[in-house]
Length: 316
Image (tube, rainbow, N blue to C red; front, side, top):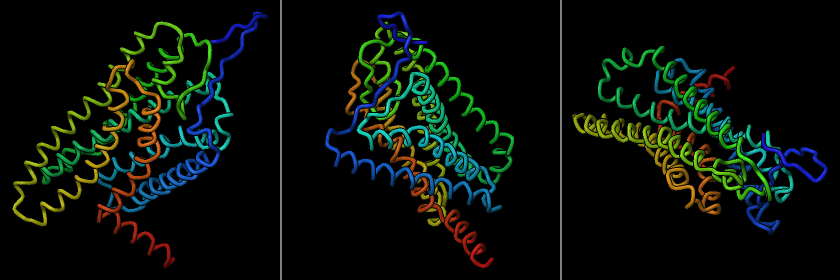
């Protein structure tokens, strides 16, 4: 545990303070409203996707199983960051977070964010199987395999998050503890430590390769084979449907991996706090609200299922 020793030999738990986006109250209020709208939109959108998949039997196939799981992950992922960020926007950063609270927030952020990235990789594999071998799709992507892949993503995310959090929060913290961010992210907290951080920096890089580079490489390979398989489809309508199905997933992938790579797949010494904070807004607020919009607008089956459920409830 990292604590602060005062003049009277009393141990005081460290508290971290978040740096406001702007010293101007009006700007803070504008950002607060924007964040609140995005957070509310992400909760409603992702909950709608999950409930639609859960309620409609025709959507009980692997593709929508993974989409429903991703929606639940997005709800918890954004909820790890948004509430405290909104409170600090209202109070100009005057509400501190305890040492334990900061460690807990970092753990869940890394855990859910890592699982989110792995799920996107699994979904690319699922689309690859569906397009490459549609006749054997249900035989290959059995319920048991889908459940194993989902649990595997959560377990890997949990292990990475636990190791990173324990390593970083065993460092000594002294001096000022103002975080140039709106939540307890890995690199901003690491910059506040006053010990040797080389081990932690190496671990962050290894974790980033595991969570970002490897899944993204697999996604790229899957999409190469997907494009080859789509081009072999003789029907123009079939090609269009396949491209539409995959383009929504690819849009989410590029947003998520692109922004995360800008922050984590570079030397810690080159980390820019201001740029890091702006880019983090994309994958903590923008992506969670865009996911349901992208998937629902581009997915006819999902829209039809939602429409059917709404009609059913209105008639009852």
